[in-house]
Length: 191
Image (cartoon, rainbow, N blue to C red; front, side):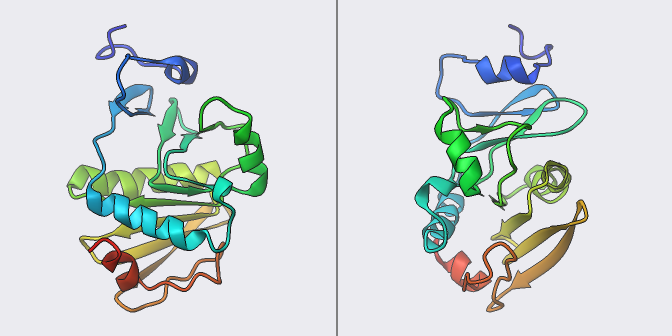
């Protein structure tokens, strides 16, 4: 298959195997290789995962889950951290691939840690924002180490309402109101 010219359907993507361990997202039908995560991004995601374990069972957390989002063409996203409902975790337990399909409940929370670069900022702040809202994901966090801020997007009537937190401000989460973290604490986790 010549991937430079062919757009894949979701079904083709879900069965695609190039014989390597490369990770891909499907964006508007195009196969996009995902670069390796920076150590900073990995540490931030793991820090948040460790803190969320106080409130959700381990089978409701993933740093590798793939989400099919709606759009004119097939698109999947792989957030840095995903929190499932108990119902969604039970559904995924019986699957061969950690892919949240459109007929499954949406995750409760997704977290993206912004990597340096304009394309990464556009993807996390613009494209994923509309994709995750359309998918019905209740809360979306954008952790931005370069701006030293966390943007919490809460789904209200199909659109995200935005709150931006920085410094010693406590991050307010509607999904996890008992979570007691500041932006500084999250960003210092990787140092």
